[in-house]
Amino acid sequence: LAKTTQPISMDSYEGQEVNITCSHNNIATNDYITWYQQFPSQGPRFIIQGYKTKVTNEVASLFIPADRKSSTLSLPRVSLSDTAVYYCLVGPRFSGGYNKLIFGAGTRLAVHP
Amino acid sequence: DARVTQTPRHKVTEMGQEVTMRCQPILGHNTVFWYRQTMMQGLELLAYFRNRAPLDDSGMPKDRFSAEMPDATLATLKIQPSEPRDSAVYFCASGLFNTGQPQHFGDGTRLSIL
Image (cartoon, rainbow over all chains, first blue to last red; front, side, top):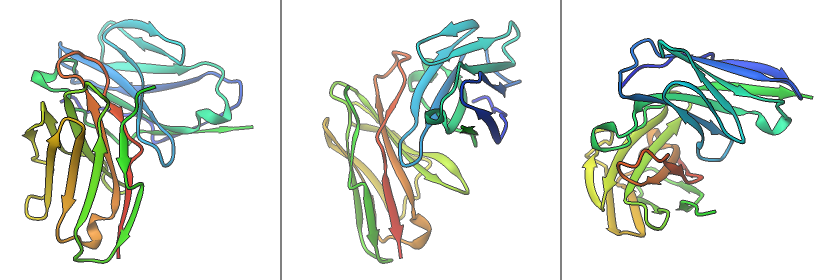
């Protein structure tokens, strides 16, 4: 499974757009990119998943360049409640028969008033 | 919203005691995962099941940990005997095999072994 690298921490202010970039140089052809969010005392929560180009849902956007060696999670107009740890994961969507997830250290996002 | 339910949410016990953590996966999900989260190691996969059969428990210390699914609505993770180094938050997640749909996590059991 591809190793990912993302910043350990980021700071932002309410109302700003936050972009968290993840590097995955060894991503395989059948790998998808998935982002999870984790609040204190809660389990990780799925945010978004994509394979290439751009994916958008009600929570975030995911930008994936053509070479797929990196991806950027974009959170529009963050609020204090977006303070959390964000994990980038890559792996086969159908993962050889199972959906095994390997979590890295994540990015700790702090949103300030 | 359907949710993965874990009990207990918190457990404090003394070294050497048996600990049992329970997980109720989302109804209809056929894969169940157990993870452990610590400050030092982050989130680690311990074991997972598909259709109640264990598929991979290579992340689990075999001598003291055991994971089972007595039925489709209950997964258990047991530690016997427990040690202080087992102190962590244990998460259960469930999903649908081979659909590409994301795993859904419970809110964990925070375990403290004194």
